[in-house]
Image (cartoon, rainbow, N blue to C red; front, side, top):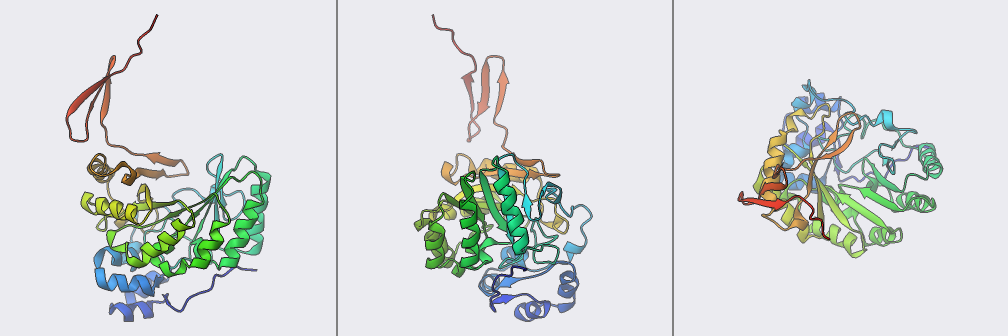
Length: 350
């Protein structure tokens, strides 16, 4: 049986609906939709109308998606790292478990653009069972990340079924959920959902905000409900050209995240995904942003800037160069640019 989450009528999912809602030409939307699906929640659509460009670009299809000569269909080599369908085992002790093939909004820069919201991503009772069996037989895996699509698009009962099954596997110590729902459809985070999730600690949630305008009262309420349930919250922001690729925007976003009890976790260099080249920045842009964060805002608000290495190489941290070693001294500069040194030798005590 194919698992389909309940679809809200407040989701715009056809070119005709979007063209009418935003008063934009229909033919380009239809051309893109023939290759990549579209979906925008009514909530996020109202934010787009209010804020404009930085949110519009994340959600509204762009003809440049069809003219990408650089991107790769599966940049992280997930398909070749899947011992069973919809489970990616890349790191020795962790697994990525894809439990839903839909999202409240199909972000135009999505890493799994090749299959999220499409028939290519088929999730059934049988695929869920096969993944659970693999996890049961692989005790080296102690940490499971639920993703998709968006796991919070599942009904409470379906999501709880999966969480309960994972908790029944003795070797799994940590369960994480990756979701953009607090940003794109925050009303989905109900008190009932929070109470249910609380039963499956230790449970962590990484959500996804890219711009300060996404931190709304509704988003804050959703995050606070989860935090009040004892769930540590992190944010995985993607660096996107023309959306958030400036120190000022990222600094404001990081500060606002802390205020709604979300710890900035990663600032990701955009993946080399087919159809997303127009979103990518240079690495130097990201390093410059980090240099404007480190020392200039609280350390708790500073994410790790990282790229997910093409071909399944894993996450690589990227940090501005502050140091060089000269013989027995470490020479470096402070966040203000002032030169400083530190002895790099051990004194032998008698």
